[in-house]
Image 1 (cartoon, rainbow, N blue to C red):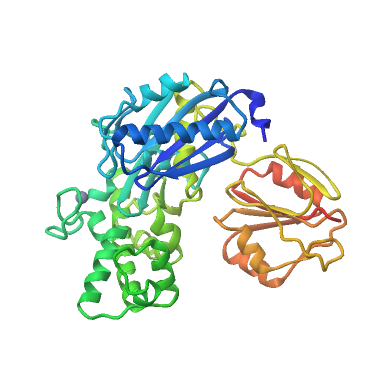
Image 2 (cartoon, rainbow, N blue to C red; image 1 turned 60 degrees about the horizontal axis):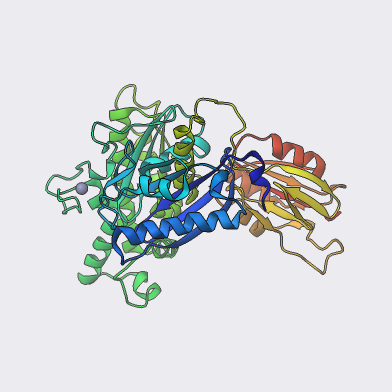
Length: 458
Ligand SMILES: [Zn+2]
């Protein structure tokens, strides 16, 4: 696909992580045209990591059939402290970019402006631009993974603090004299509720003789317990995992109270691997604590929402920062058509065009803008099921849209069952079920976070 090159304002956002480097090339509106990733090199020092970042950028350009000259700017998200004014990395505790002059090196290579920012700050900025905090004037992001990171943005500006280290929510002390934290202090929020802390507590309980389904799920090897395994253990109602993750959720609830009392953000966004996997269990516990706040006047603000962009939050935040750098600040032109979503341009029976790409049978569009083929069903007269199953709807609603638009074909033959309507009501997803031409119009005009299924075969 090369339709993105028309306006010659492409951006690249890169999320540099301790285990992988992922990037995306996007239009100015935030619509992602292509993605690319690679493993973070373990060897070769900072030069090796910079080379890997360069390769991801080059691969993105090649994938999109673009040249560096088609780029307006590049944004790089770094897991550590950065000096955004100089484009330098100050320190990265968990990888080897400390001291790297990354902005200058990439600018020399690609001859476009390059900005660098902290990854969690940029994740919060991404959610503020196009995600769960889109309509809020301020947002505080809390991201629970191996560690716990925080970011604060207000009207499109990252709050940097005096030394680029504001919003380090993971290191507010929540238990005086508590467990040692990676930062050197004791009893930090991160030392109590990060995935590493959860793993540590589970391993200790098992050493003390407690039983857990994880032993079975992970073949007796508890040296690494990923969020997905925690999720599966929660689904099995494992007593030990439920107790420890509930504790982490409670600590997170009180951390949210502290955030609310300190900075009074309009929205608190919860994200990161632990929340992505275990959010259904964790978020209600957090909300209950936050809603029970007794401090007069505080209860109105700081509502807790789940991140809606997932892995894309950081890369889109990097794109937003890149736009700010070249004087195209997405937050200075509110109400414009910034959107991750492609427009559905045209359709006729058996053909639909979405963002320049043509599809010859039913498709669904997820909340992250990805277009997926709907499964064919050769047994049916029109090659696709006319009854949409709950399973299908669950799949297309991955990531929690606010609106689901279903196009029922030219003659309106597609139907959904009562189980589907019930599911959508429970998930608070608004359903618009319309004949396909009207559904396309409704989808294109909808400004909310949206998903769609378009039946086009009859
Ligand atoms: Zn700490």
